[in-house]
Length: 174
Image (cartoon, rainbow, N blue to C red; front, side, top):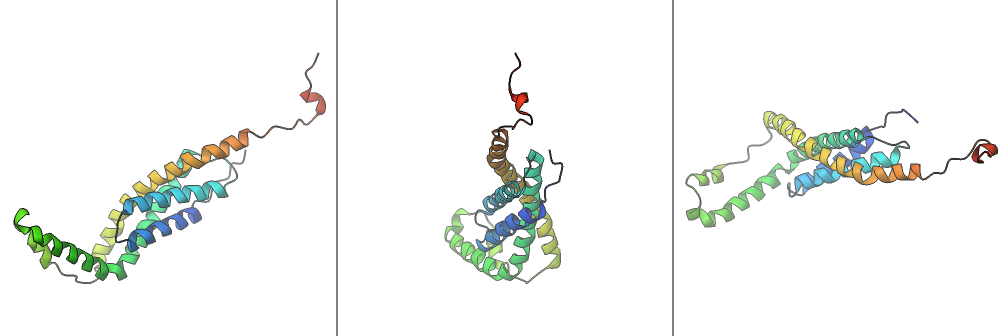
């Protein structure tokens, strides 16, 4: 058995980049689903590139790393997309104002919120919070991907028939 360590970086970077990009561009619609899918895809890539059987912890780790990469990519893409996010939020709050008599008092203070540009403190807090959340959902995706693809790889390895070294070894003795 080969005791090499699998390379987590490239599968996690690919899956996390895809998840972070789709999550940022889709205005955070189903963002946790994209992160789970990124962890799933990272586990799939890891299993396909690794010739030896992996452990559950490998699927978990590549999913967590994928989630961290997704959080970084998402936060970086949120900087140029902030005006788009702000416009979408403003439209949502404006449409919500039609129901103002049914909402609690003081809610319309949200309409007074203005976009004030990039804030480094908010950016760092956003990376930390989304990093923890995305790592959790990436781990779920990594475990799902591991459980779906690694058992097939193990069964294929078990189905290989061993070849006898010596023809007399395969014959029963009388």
